[in-house]
Image (cartoon, rainbow, N blue to C red; front, side, top):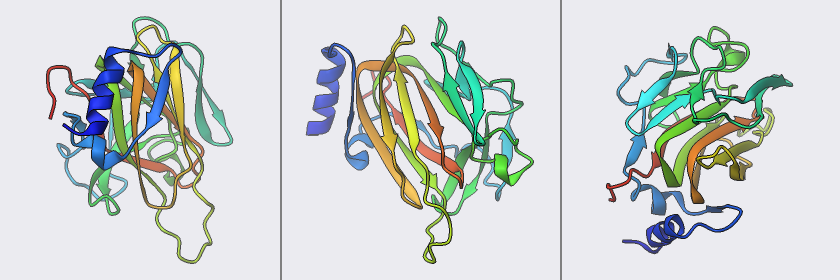
Length: 225
């Protein structure tokens, strides 16, 4: 067992007062998290792919656009989430027909998910511009994800990727902490240890090119790689 995973287990056993989110190496952590969402169960369709209607359920986690009790609003074309989640914690679509679309993604070399934003699936400006919410069947003390923020730009003509904010919630719906990513063009990796363990996570962003996500990792109690 690696040092990072040992730290993860220690944090889950002895949570710190006030909550803490600690960034660690993706490759070091991801291999020890048995929960996996990689979207490979869907047909590898070229972009724009296919929208997935309603909430999207995987083993151990449900994906949506927001948490029940939150308010969704649009700021400069990007979805923002405010408010305290209601009990019990639950994912919602925010009145969208589909919270995500799945398509084969050239940079990942596999299927990936695009959060659908205010402009909807039918428009290029709507694919990748939405918010995401993850609600776990059991709270996870660690989380890892790969995120793509526009393709490399050798000519420097496109705007720089915008910030991505991960918010972590405990079982009561209180914010444990946040992690802010200032992504580079291309694939970025995020891996964090969370204490106390997170029951839910939301992802919002201000990236002009839109984001795609893949290889989402989390813990499943009783299963340790």
